[in-house]
Amino acid sequence: MTVWEYVLGGLLIIASIIMIVVIILQEGNQQGIGVISGGADTFFSKNKARTYDAVFARATKWIAVGFVVVVLALNILLKFVFV
Image (cartoon, rainbow, N blue to C red; front, side, top):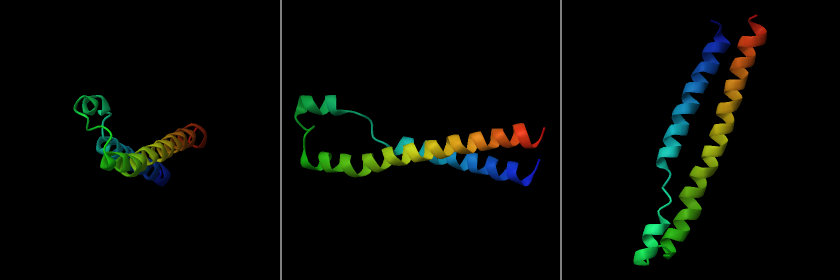
């Protein structure tokens, strides 16, 4: 195995761990439960949705794109460089 395979493999492991952590940190969609008690439309819940949930959703998208790029780079490296 070459250095590039180790580097890309390490990046793949790091990206997958970060993606798992970011997905776990996201809140579930539980607005239906709050509607019954009237607590769904509070001021703090609206601001919280714009900050943490938006940041985690954006981070998930970018980490997923990075994950796909690393997987493609690793496959291209193994397919065409080491024939």
